[in-house]
Length: 290
Length: 205
Image 1 (cartoon, each protein chain N blue to C red):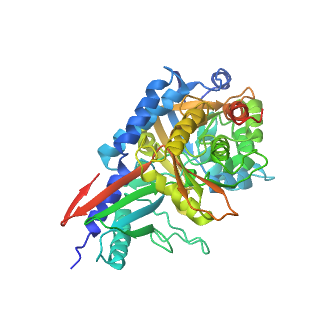
Image 2 (image 1 turned 135 degrees about the horizontal axis):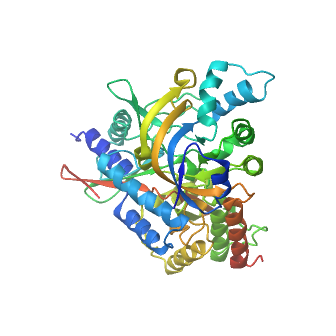
Image 3 (image 1 turned 135 degrees about the vertical axis):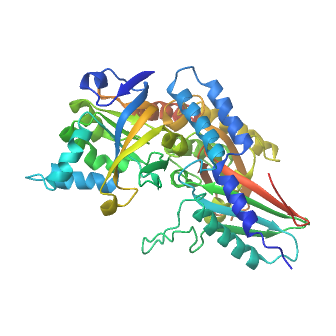
C-alpha cells in the first residue's frame, strides 16, 4: 500500500513559495555587497532581501506571481504514478486554498481561471523511475514575467554570426540577456539547453533550475562556458531590475541533449531572482525537505 | 535619499533625475488596465465628463498624486476594513496608450510600476512635470508592508479586486526614478550601453 503524500506535497509547496533556497539568498546577499553604497542597484537588493525575510516570517508568497508549479518526480520501482499525480493535484488545490499559491491556471480558450491551479497540463509533472530506493520530488515555481523572456535560437544565426559550436551558444546566450534587460526581474538565472528538439530544448533548459547556484557541469568545456557567460553577462551592466549595476545574472547553468544532424537549437530559459525551488525526499516512509 | 510627500509639487518633481532613490509617503491610487481605459473614455477623450460623481472623488486624489500599476491581493478585516497582503508592481507598458493623457489631465506627478514606459509617456512626463518610479518586481510582501492603511476603494464591484482603484496610505516606500521630467529614461540608457557592450563581446562592434 503506497502512502498518501498529499499533506507532504502541500508542505513542499509552502516551503517553495514562501522562502528562497539558502544558496539563492546567499547569492543575492553577495550581490548586495558588490553594489555601491546608496546606488539604485543596492536599494533593489536591500528591498529583495528584506522581502524574503518578511515572506519567510509570515509564511506568505515571496512573489505574488507564484508561477507555474513544475514537479520533477523520481520514484523507485513499484510506485504508482497515477496515485502520485492525483495527490500532487489535490495538494496544489489545497495550497491555493491556503494562499501559498495564487490561482494561476487560465483556460486558454475561454479565459476562465480554474481558481485552484489545476487544469490541462497544469501543474506540470515529470515522472522518471530510477534505481534508488527512495522517492525524490523537486518543485520549481516559475513566474510569468521571466517565462515571457525565454527564447530559442536555431543555429547558425547570421545576425549574431553564431555558428554551431560553443562559441555560437555563447553569442546566443548573451543576446538573450540583452533582449531580456530587466524585464524578467533581473538578476536572473540562465538555464540553457544545447540541442534536443524544440520541445526537449525548453525542458532541459528548465531542468537546470534544480541545480544549486555555483554547481558546475561535469563536462569541463561546458563548466568553463558557464563561468565565462556568468562573468560576461554581468559585464553588460544591466543590473537588478535593469537599473544598471554589477549583477545581471546570479548564475548560468547549461545542459545538453542529443539533436538531429539537421538541427542545432540553443534554448534559454530565464528564472527571476525569486528562484523558488525545494526538494522533498521520502525514505522508509519518512518525509524530509532540502 | 530624497523624501516625497503627497501631494507633490511640480518643483519637487523637476528636481528629480534618473537613478535617484526616493522615499514615498502619503496617498497612492492603484490603477491598471480597466481603470486607465475607464478614465480615458469617461473623463478625458469625451466632450463632457461622464460619471461626474466618480470624477469628483478621483480628481482630488490624482491632482499632485501618484498612480500605482498594481493588482493587489487584499484581505478584509473582521470590522469590514481592508488590508494589503501582496502588492508587487505589474508591467507598466500596457498603459502606454493612456498614461500621457492621464498625467496631463489630472496633473499626476508620479507613476509607479515595473519595466518602464515608452516615448509617449516620457514626453508626457516632460511636458507636465511627472516622473516614473520603479518598484521592485517580486517584492510583494515588502511593498504590502509599507501600506499603512487602505483609505478607500472605488469601483471594487464593477472592476473586481485587482482592477479597482485602491486608495492607500504608504510609509517610507523606497523607489527608483527611472524616467524623469527632463526627457531621460534610465531604461533607454541601460539598453543602449548594454547593446554596445554586447557587440564588443561577440565581435559585432
